[in-house]
Image (cartoon, rainbow, N blue to C red; front, top):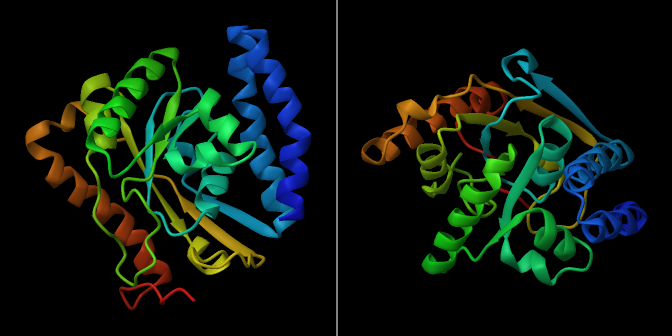
Length: 239
């Protein structure tokens, strides 16, 4: 918590200055400050990233990244691992958090997950912002999976965004974030996180009629990675 607070407090004045400048170029580069800070924080936390299949992704490209979701640590891992101009879709409760709320309001897109109308607003905002050339990171499960099954329900948003914008979807698989920082426990342990990249799925392959099929396809891609580390076919129950 001390490392997290120190890095955020150091970064915060620069984020405010970037927003107040109203200079699009400065705001663009400001998006890379939190992701670089995520790399620093993971290093100081004692968390090592091992990224597989880096060559599949163009660092200058535009993608809709989706991953499995087991921990608050996933946002740090995504920021540290993804090289692109990146925005996040995050839960609206973060708006009430100091510093993180400012970052969410001015740089990313909040969503009230249980409010259908607000989910529609979030989709509209992402459609507008993606025209700036950014990529998005979205956890289609919507909340941390604290059970033993590999996946809980996937929401449609990431797939609909691909349909409406023509931006390809890239599945990512995160391994061990739930063990290093369990969802219901603030304890963070040093350790290794594996990140698996996959070939982008062209938006042309996704339609409103086959969203359920595409969800299953993405889950099967992630499941292959997960089975390498959890051969029993399930996660261990988080403490």
